[in-house]
Amino acid sequence: MEKNNQVNVEQSSLKLDTSKYHVRKTNKGLRVLVFVGLILWAFINLFPIYWMFTFSLKTNEEIFGENVAGLPNEWKWENYDTAFWGKGGRDKKAAGNIDGTEEGGFQLPKIIRQFINSVIITVSTILISIFAAMMATFAMSRIQWKLSKWAYAMFMLGLTIPIHASLLPVYKTISSLGLLNTYTSLILPYSAFSLAMSILICSGFMEDIPKELDEAAYIDGAGLWKTFIKVIVPLMKPALATIGIYTFLQCWNELMFANQFISSGDKMTLPVGVQQLSGQYLTEWGPIGAALVIATFPTLLVYIFFSKKIQDSFIAGAVKG
Amino acid sequence: MKQKQKYIAIFLFLLPALLLFVGLLIAPIIMSIYYSLFDWNGLRALDPSNDFVGLKNYATLFNQRIQFGSALKNAFILAGLSVFLQLPFSLALALALGKKIKGERAFLSIYFLPVLISTVVIGQLWLKIYNPEYGILNTFLRALGYDGENIRWLGDQSIALGSVFVPTLWQYVGYHMLLLYAGVKGVSPELREAAKLDGCTDWQVNWNVVIPTIKPIIKVSVIFAVTGSLKSFDLIYVLTNGGPMKATEVPSIIMINQLFKANQYGIGSAIAVLLIILCFFFAILIGFIFKERDIYGKK
Image 1 (cartoon, each protein chain N blue to C red):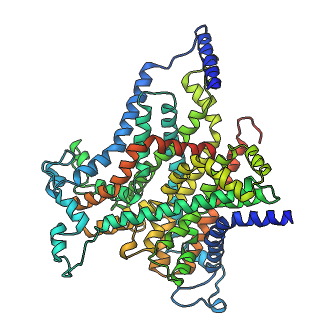
Image 2: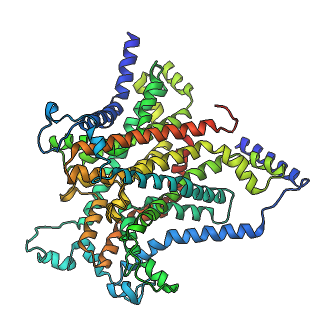
Image 3: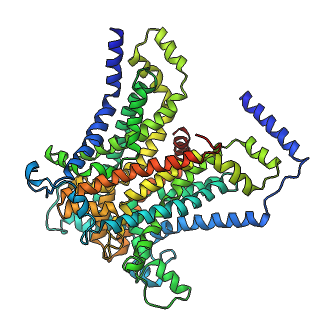
């Protein structure tokens, strides 16, 4: 706190000095121009999302001509019913009219199921990746041994290796193990591919923990494991959010592996599901829009509440890395 | 004894990461290299003595039918656009937002938003934007007075590639912007003040002080942009899947089609291997370029 004050004092004294010099001010017109540019770009970013929300509530007639960009004249919530339960909405589905089969008990709408699948896969990946990365980073940066630098360099290769590289061999292995269409088939490759980034971030954060703490723990008679669990892990909390956000960005949208490994059934991830659904409703835009909104809404909600935290964590990764 | 215990501990600490890394990255890469040397359709077991074709698969890639060369060219164009258009634009945004402009947080949040939205959603959305009859883009152009034929943004061979690249570049502006913004915010205010005292304009401060200071982050951004372009898949898969008439094909699209549609495991693996080599080559090359042009003129 005191240090901060000092800096402030220094800065303000600097500012005092500047008054004696001629400091060029940025042209006012230019500043306005920059600001207008920023607003324009914000508009370009928001408009497609706004458009998606509105056309998810419109009829084809409205989308196709009467009312292209405005708010819906008549809010057509049936689109959401269709996106959730298939053609005809929930009532028909419940009566078993869809494909003539009677369904017993309550079933989650497919798209919700897929959303939960994506959450399960992403969260598991984040956990595994954090766990493996913290242990490995501890071994490489807190224990002294000859090849630790080499081991680190080897893991960093993972930053450049494209995920495609292992698609076929992993596919063959997973299918021969009978693991196709399981969560594991995606969690394992995703963890492996987010590992390099996680280790990079971990080592940035671990550097900030003073080595004296390790030494103190050692003097108190704690072994390596105890030091790791009691001293390092609790202090690594700030790293978790950062690793989480980077890993999330890598897995949540992943399509190539998800498409091949879980192509059917109730384990399908959200991107694959949305892609298939859109194929079914080629000419009806409303239900597709509704599906897109459903797929986006939870992320959007989390982002609205935690946008500062998410950005700060992302930024921390850039600075530590 | 103590020493031995230490090494056992090191090994155990590394074990989970090593298992993942070796099992799912290193071993598969070696297998891919191995597969790429065979003419193998994957439907039967590989017969090493009969199916071995050496480097023939790599030559086959460039024949008239597969046209890997043009896919590679597309990926390079994307990489070029990404480095020389997307990154400078992201940098400009980062610089503008980096000096306490009104609404800084709101702008940051909005610009980062497309990064968080699923690529499939973005792709489906742009399919609707580009739709020749009812898409918002053509409607907008008509409102501006355009009255020619409907423009088939994704269906016309001559413009499809450009149409596919626009959302690809658009989505990740926020990603690079935030990376670079982190760097810009990290430049010490004293350094800026000092330059100002020396009579620099804002423009000169950015050019001579801020940009050289954040070079390491720019380097990371460039590496991500180039390797990301070489790997690009999702959006193109959703928008065109390489069509019309291969106009928007990129290496990973061909790879998927060769592997899982044509069952050409050898050829698909050859593409995977080439992608790894290219990614490494460019990562090293970019590292080298940035090392040479360090601010102090030495390593």
